[in-house]
Length: 443
Image (tube, rainbow, N blue to C red; front, side, top):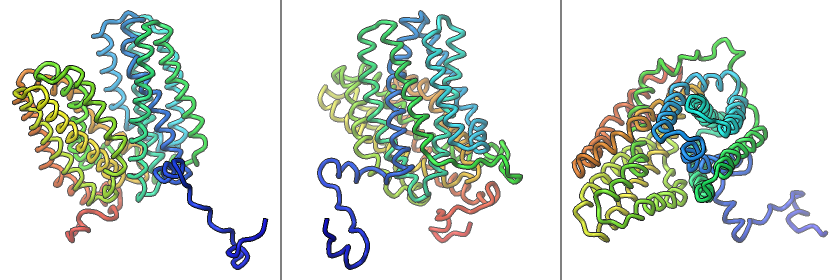
């Protein structure tokens, strides 16, 4: 093959032509090849398995194992609580022994426990297995965050997290659709296949993690942070709680809004599911775009405040839909879902920067567990609060819920400034690009 003029004159190979067509457009929307793209692929595969499990596991334990719905709910609550409570110790393990290795161990244990779940025949074994699953799933999530922090530069973490979340929603939807086939079949073999499917995706994720570079742990270092470093960081813990208020938006969307549509409005009953579908599509389409500007603490703080306001506005809209005719109610509910989705997109984007940039870089694992503590109240008490307020108090309940987001809006700026001012005390450093520096205030 003859040399091109460029090659002959410079001695270098010409740059490859830009990809064209559908494949090229897809490549342009993904992170660069390497760890970032592999992390996004892991998120996709994980979400498919989770969609299978979440959509069919509760039905499996009721229909095939013979447990009551109350027993299943109690077991899932215990599992969720244990996962959040043990997040910091598991994160410390990731810091000491390397997040890749600890995450692989957690995901492998998840596969084993999923297989064990297919053999459950009574309540107490169910509690033991489901609680262990809650711990390893939470630990794997914390490990993934530490891997991202160790392999991806600060300027790319928000973008990679946004890509991961966008594909996560798509993969989860695929898993949910596949689980629907098992629920329709309503046989033990079909339900067990959901567990096997999730276990298979977990094993595949283990293989993919082995392709990532190893991140050294801190166990050989005498100056390594102790296992209580994050729990002693009171400003960071307070920030996690205030920031976590936006997570109530997820509960409103998946629990509060469907029940409201069915019980208090003239909207068609299928709208309860359609509105969640609209949210899923919007997150897939706009999560990456919504994360732009959140890669600095200044930008993240602004987005976080907008998230609170968007969620509060959504609550105010929903409050009055019980007085509207059918199709105006649908239109207002759809607008409220758009606002809830904006709050979700902005809130998650801002939380990524807050979580990583204000943590001790030598203890990202345990700080991830500490930041996860901020989701405890929304996850555990959120469903009770949302259903209690909106069902019993109707419109007033939605307005009270909106006031909670307004409170978060008011508390957040002072809380994040407190956290920034104390980084030198708790982590031995001052984060680059802080709000104080950006606005001309001294730290």
